[in-house]
Image (tube, rainbow, N blue to C red; front, side):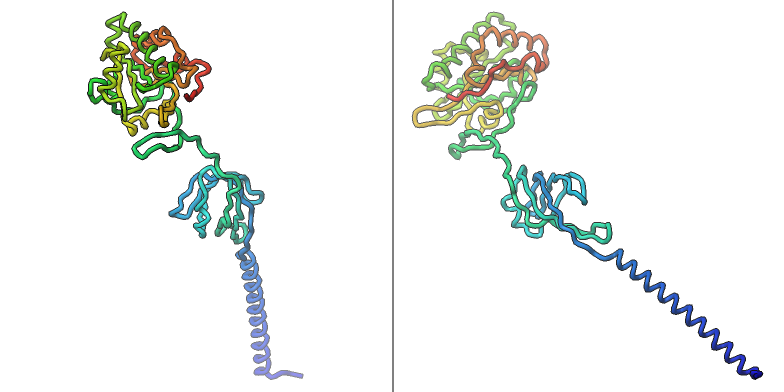
Length: 339
């Protein structure tokens, strides 16, 4: 059968349309499959890990805690990082040094971390409470955090004292001279404490004074931690009985706030009872630059002899600079001792 020309043309057009439709359907199918794969890649997942670590910093106002955490298997290695807590009440009892743990919820898109949140933080072991020192101030007797003990070579904090002559003097006023400082109170009833230190300073003063040129560059200071009783008048009378003559050997007193600047850093502990002041012994040799050349804390350590300190004083005057720790390290057994 012979098809008329116009019929053949219609059939050709129909075939072409069919091919085009087929191509469009194929493209649509491919696009749908591609979108499906991308959707699978972007699909969010939530994984919860266990976080264990030690608190390094707490910012309660910002609701943030920095934790040095252990490695989290399958997620990250050990590191210190900050965490924001939505529930800020979790930080009320958290302190630096606490050992903590809690669930870490991590939101991911594929392998990409989009968000993380630390939930239900729990203190498993509180930080060890730092040692405290008995402190006396205008607010009364308090237990305060013990500051780090100063060492040979450290600068001695400046403070203000009043001498037996009623003069106001700073420790820094004595820069350029070797200073031997000890702590006492005139009412001390035990002969192996303050009275013993008075005897030792009397002997040391005599040895230093044997050389006038040396004596001009040395200052011995017996500092009272009993300002309620040891007025300049009381100190002057006490000094006269002990043979102390300024400027070589001076008795002085400081207020409790001024003592607070220097006492605990040097290792001195003191506190009043109904009848006396409980205290330990503390003697420090300060070089001409204001740094510690020797520090003896405790009863055993303060069994030093005047000849020992005289030798150190002589070396310091000759050197005119801080003594190395190897030369002036305290003797063995310089442990604290409280009366």
